Image 1 (cartoon, helix red, strand yellow):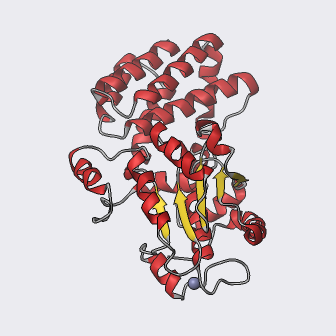
Image 2 (cartoon, rainbow, N blue to C red; image 1 turned 90 degrees about the vertical axis):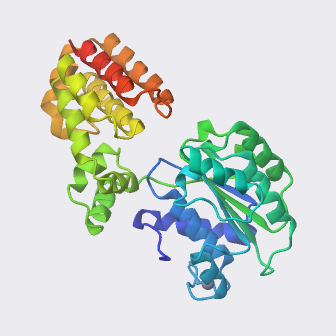
Image 3 (cartoon, protein in one colour; image 1 turned 135 degrees about the vertical axis):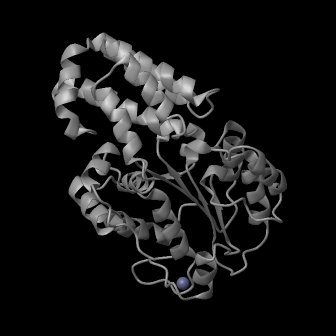
Length: 343
Ligand SMILES: [Zn+2]
């Protein structure tokens, strides 16, 4: 595990170090998805726990504490995130996780942070720290907390246990309970400039970095994830249809993309419609500049009220895309709607 943060986070890192003298008991880091917030707060957590922290606030990477941290078994550290973000089922022997583990085998992993996960923190916070230092809890994304879990967390934040620091990250503050927001010190993490993000992606060896980056709205980690998932071909299949809509094409593409994660396909369409809309209103294209000709043609042709209805329709579908009865039917309906809107 490297000690480094991303190049666009340097000034945020320095700013954050000034808080260390009077550490707030909860900090809520916020910013767009895919800019590296969780990596940033994990680095900060390691720095807080390190027993030989460097002058710039980075962890030494060599002490006992850093060793545990990189093995993900530091006794004074907990990371809370939805099951869907874990690579493997949670470790055995922790309270409340037996059921979660069983559930993980039988159905798709939860995208929510559940109350059991917050309750499990109570035990952790009730025992004294192993290293006589801080206890650190990292939690993300905050918007994944379901209502009971939010309320449980709020109780903890209202009566913060001594020596415990909560580092929470969120992609959208308006989806976090206001009472939780009010208990946290807010800290904004920036979106890198296009040039900065592009340079970084190229350094990582991402081919076609510029397209990936634009398609993810400038968020470099999201761009890298998409590039690595190898879905370029699927995206092109969809974009070709969106550029040249037809009923027959819609049915074919729905058949072809039925195994692709739906939420991704829905956001590709959302971005496409956003581009048509923004081109119509302001002559700008954000996500798919290489389709300028087709986007301009559609912007010309589709009436603004139809376009707004289409955007609204797709946004509503986004909400149900996690659990469709039939992915193929879901796609057919969505793409036929689109084709009709363009007709
Ligand atoms: Zn260390």
